Length: 68
Image 1 (tube, one colour):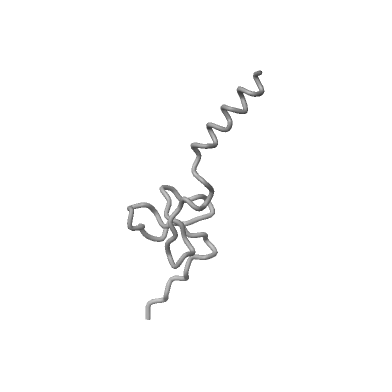
Image 2 (spheres, rainbow, N blue to C red):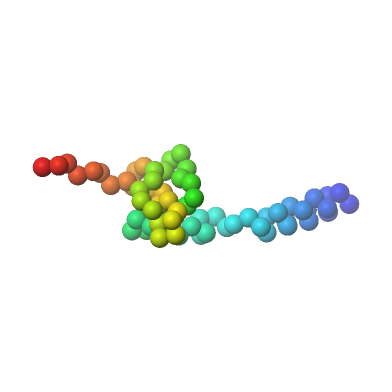
C-alpha cells in the first residue's frame, strides 16, 4: 500500500515539473537560452525580450573585437 502511495505522489510531483530544455526560449542566433539564472558552464550575454538572461555556453561566446 505504501509503495502505491509513493508512486502516486511521485507521479503528481513529476507532473508539475517543467520539461527539459523545451521550456526555455532560444536567443543569440539559437545558441543561447533565455533563463532566470545561468548555470556555472554558461555566461550572460544580454537580456531577452521577456527580461530574462540570455545564457550562452562559454565555448559558444563570440570573441570580443579588438579596438583599432
